[in-house]
Image (cartoon, rainbow, N blue to C red; front, side, top):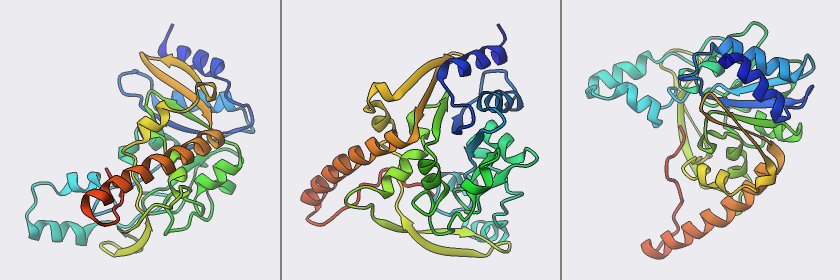
Length: 276
């Protein structure tokens, strides 16, 4: 059986809701399957009334992200300054999302696709509800209540991890915003409007360093598991998974913060690998 045909069979077994909303995170490396075929298989599983969403993040548009640091590695101070001055601004209809994988870029560039307007953490979508779900992404809210993630949660979206682990699960970032106590805040910087026009804003300090552990602790009855092209495929409803993640993160990160404060004599955040 070809990889593409096997994928269609796998998607049929998972329980993707026809007419529903599906957010997908995928790695197609090593499958030999074109992203267009995967996109089409997902749209077929959703049916004509379904909506497909993929993260179209642009961490390169930041001077603190791992992606940006990789771009300037080895440059001297003058070269870094020139690089910053030449940085193009984020343009929703034109800026690629290379670090998000071939499927995300395929969704973004498909005719009729909609993309949210956040300069660092946009999402792209196809289908009748894409505009409704991705509109009005506040430029100072990565993935919280004023982002499409909150709308996806409200729409009872499903999440598909296609050959990637829970460390890639963007839905857990919404859980970060909802933890008690809320996460600390930090300054983010990016280019908007014109080339080299760097702006700053504050938002929650996001950290995906413990997402894999959160996923491992989700109740098993929330997850439908299969395999495709030698790696795991997991489908789950976003709403109960995020609710469980809120409880986990509130408990675990609060505990880590208390231990750090005891060691340092002051309040301390729990950032492991900050995003952006």
